[in-house]
Image 1 (cartoon, rainbow over the protein chains, first blue to last red):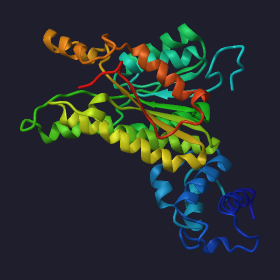
Image 2 (cartoon, each protein chain N blue to C red):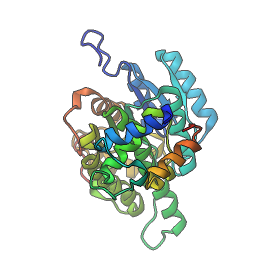
Image 3 (spheres, chains in turn orange, brown):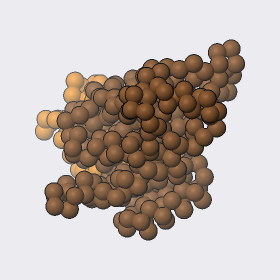
Length: 80
Length: 254
């Protein structure tokens, strides 16, 4: 796993309070009780802080899964 | 946080004031800068914004940022916050001040007038609040100040659209305050009364006299009267104040 991928997972883990055995690829917005609308904004802030970037509103709305989050940070020039 | 000895309430803080090339917005920008804040200025006239940024830097030192653009233009608002992020990496204070005043009696209100007034006064404030809250959430702190109006709290004939646009900011303030309190961001509104700005210069003498007669304290308000309250709301002096609307009107009753 790349360092960037680990940072992305850490952002998810810390902001959503995920257990160690989480299957990140299967995470979806509202798919688990921790990932609600309030936690979503915390997650966005954590990802922005981790990669020193600012997401656009469309990114925030469109980040509906871990896979989408990967796509979005790649779009901002992060190599996962 | 500023130490009591330096007297600067906003030392090290970054603030963004929309519609800040003149009137109340400019006075707020100057007041925040005088208290140690780096201030981002905004307006539709890019040259005027640049000139004011230069003026502010000359007056107070520090860093003034020029962020020209129409607050009702979502893409321009996004660019503003991208620039704030790139430059400061943070935002501590947003003052949603940009506003336009267009009067029309019922029956003479065009859809275009509604779009213009609500676009700047309401949509613009919502877009900026959203952009600012995103940056403030990272630090789990911040203060957002929405400039409403006594017309929004009390209403006035001929000002149904303006009043609606400013009343909307009260709902915005109270809702956003509830949503953002858990992340340490405060949201408050100021409702100015009759204030000496370019907006009222066109008023006939008899209307001016009528307005003065409605003010308990018997004098027109100054931009500084509003800026001082904005400073209070921006600073830690109001650390436990959120979701409030402060009338700054000298006891005016319409």
